[in-house]
Image 1 (cartoon, rainbow, N blue to C red):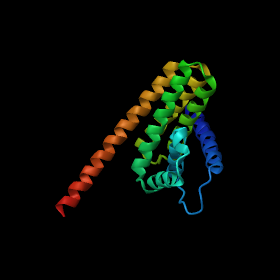
Image 2 (cartoon, rainbow, N blue to C red):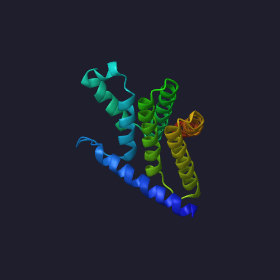
Image 3 (cartoon, rainbow, N blue to C red):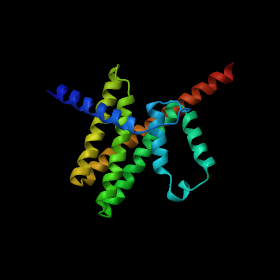
Image 4 (cartoon, one colour):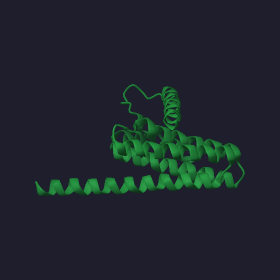
Amino acid sequence: MAFQQAQSLYKKNMKQAEAYKNKTTLSKDQAYSPSTAAAARTAQAQTPPAASAAPASSHAYQQNAIQTASRGDLTLLLYNGCLKFIDKADKAMGEQDMEKKNQFIVRAQDIIRELMVTLKTDTELGKNIYQLYDFIHRRLIDANISNDNEALHEARRFVQEFRDTWKETIKLDRQARFKEGDQA
């Protein structure tokens, strides 16, 4: 029964993610990958209003940085973006601004769904991570529907743990690659 529920939720999330991807368009000269598109949307949403009026070269720089980032760096951008949206939702919840709270939680949910869709679940580790992403997604929904601050904080703790672990993994990978290059 639980498997059927998870499968149903997975199919629903896949449909939502596909619809979301179809809404997002990239120019013809940009290569599409789900992580690149999500990172671009996250970076664009995080741009402060004053910066959005910056010259086109700033936007081009941002786009270039996203397009040339490694997959690991893109995933880190997604985790950071999710944390920022959760923090903004928490602040809006404290200020009783339910419209903004909803917008920020939905953005955090979008990022978690993107991580779920792009996750390879052909290993036990991938399946376990998927279940954790699903749990985070459900806690964000609970926080949004019930104005549950504890659910929001719980989701944040999990995302932060993922982010910190991912950051350390990238650091160790770079150190290993640097040592390999040094020995050649």
